[in-house]
Length: 158
Image (cartoon, rainbow, N blue to C red):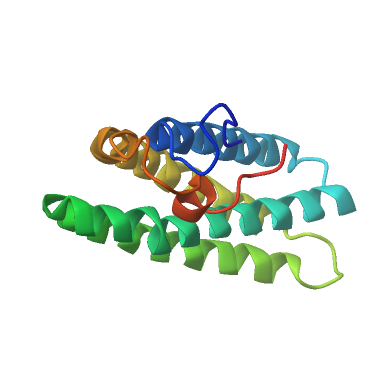
């Protein structure tokens, strides 16, 4: 997911890369929600993999991009604080989804659907707000030493 066209060890268009990750996560969540009507072991695995990828992305942002931006652009601190609160709410939803999927009984489709629907609504507004407020500041990091993974978490696997 992270473009490889940047010079080795240098950041390039990190804000744009964040948008690409958001698009991938949104598409995967939409696919999960569409497939809930035909639950299977693969669907359960896909859902758990998605939850892990989203969690890694938010953890990466919290410990990478957000810390750097808070230091470099202090006026963004209130925005970053709001985003971290969103990440905590998302983490709670992911924990509930994982708990619903943790036993070997039939998937509680209605409960999983309700959680994923709430997650989709939250992420739609969260991603737009984050992109609107942070993309320019992240893109301004172009040319600095670093790797996108250090700022955004590991890239989701297709």
